[in-house]
Image (cartoon, rainbow, N blue to C red; front, side, top):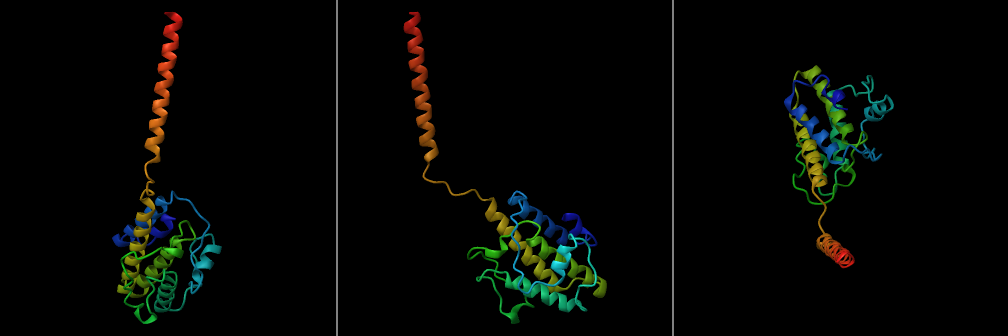
Length: 197
């Protein structure tokens, strides 16, 4: 996974940091693949072709322009957002999704190779195309990358938190166990003393 994403973009620190966020997200799920997939509604056609090609480099399935592919990726990203993060179509170019968790992550809580790895692959293709055609990365690419990283970090952070403790059943249980053991040892010791005594 990591090797594929790094290819051709290793000299871009923000991209390398994003890959580390993806790895951290997967680690927070203990690298389990839950066989879930991200929503396919409005998904760029390149994604299923890439998956069918064993997630290896593909060619010939990208739109004619970087702008067309960019729009496909932005729309797909927006359609998979929970209700509290969805932007109006007119606001996609600004890429100002809310950066405060206001509910459940829904469809975005999707670890594994069919999850946010696919979004990162789209960002990689977009970046490689943009650098090839324009010699630089656009503000839209940078904003979307920052948002994807924020989402991955937020989901990973929630996953890493320990579950809430109930009202301390373990200490009471442990206390009972210790008292029972002490009582058993004392009774056993008294029995041996009376036999030997």
